[in-house]
Image (cartoon, rainbow, N blue to C red; front, top):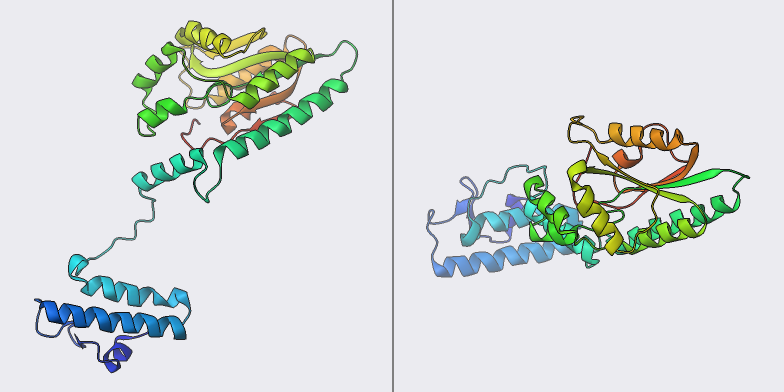
Length: 278
């Protein structure tokens, strides 16, 4: 690590006691140019002599004496900047960052679910009633265009009118999973945190996107005020089990879609970093 003493030995024009440019707070154009050159010399020598992680004090030194950002005191800021997180989410969805690719990870999980569905259906016992449970939002249907339009905000008073438009496109892998289940004579049930008044629009949207012949669509009652949707979803699965079904597969984008009893033989979580539902 390069100290101020070492910087002084390299004729960097700093007053050691005040750690300010010699000549006071005000810098002339000539002093600025000389200072910049000397600091660049320090950085070059530092790169050759010390590990990269040790260059942070030098970079900070430059920032402190750069006229465009002089004397800036930075807070710890342990929480990521929201604006940058939103940019990262969009890049993840569009598969344009090194942070991952939403579509690739989504398809990978869908393939795992499909493989299990086919294997389990082949092992069906005589007379066994098998069920596939699917969540809706970010599982059967994508609302990304809504979140993109609201700058990645989940604004409930705007989300309900969006549901009523019945314009959410299908998530292809889940649609194929649903169609395969019907071909294998596995009954399909939707369990969603959407509220009961959204039933007509939800049914219209699902049908328009190719979902058909489901055996049940269970929506959360308006008077359900539990903090977690998991309570409703587990009770909805219990109603399916009470009809003598074996829930072999449950697919959702939140752990609250999958947690609680009764559980499926296999639960598959799809990626969704865009919002959180407890």
